[in-house]
Length: 333
Image (tube, rainbow, N blue to C red; front, side, top):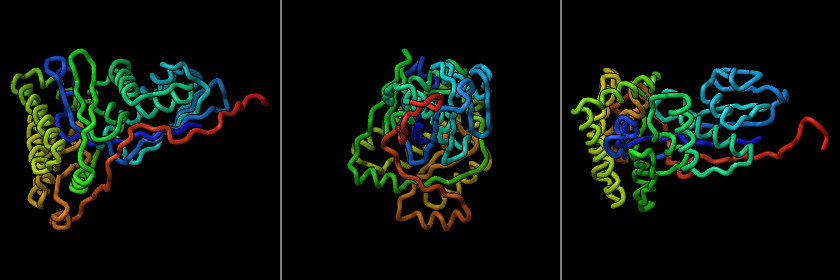
């Protein structure tokens, strides 16, 4: 048996510039971090060597790869021609909550499958392969930031170029300042699930409008400004940049925010947060607030009954965390 562990991510600024409708016209850039909430994928030989068994929110048992209903499972196993396996997925957080779970699943599945067949995988390679699976083979109208964030891990500035190349740069901060940043972030659950594909498709179409395109360019500028601030170990502008990015993001398409999201966001700002944004494509999930640690108890008191997710930054990306002894179950050694 082999088990992979792949982190989820939170994006701070520049989201949406990883869509081809934008970066093929102007270089895209996002600043994001992976967090200590994970997708786990386990793979081991299946007892019936001519079949495949899959366990996720459903259970599938099929005789050939083309019969698999789950598109990511199907395309990854087809890529490597792999049968006679049992694959299981477990996640710390439900899908559709804005933490990039779909891409974490794809990256983790690729990492586990490649380890199973004896292939080494760098973070950049896993990110590239995951983009190929989700965007080219499955046809999802999504961007590239989630795949690279999950695969490479850490606090990163990720750039997207018109020639389809991607560059991942680590943000280097003093350990004390990085810990302060981590401690000043709060994640509050709004509830519900969203259809990221539908929202991103609408956002991609909206960028054809000149004003929307310019708004997306301003979000990229904010990502660069945030990188500069963090590399100088300056957190003074962090809340402001999150807030400006959120206002720009909301202006792109109506599906990004809802009345409930706006109400909770405004309440959080009144309760002491200096900025924030809804994570993911929009519509539901988690709101990330930047609230200095000394104000957080007052924030909680004023917010009332909220569901808060405790988290820390992850520094490692997708990892193989267990490799069992490979045993041939079909004949005696």
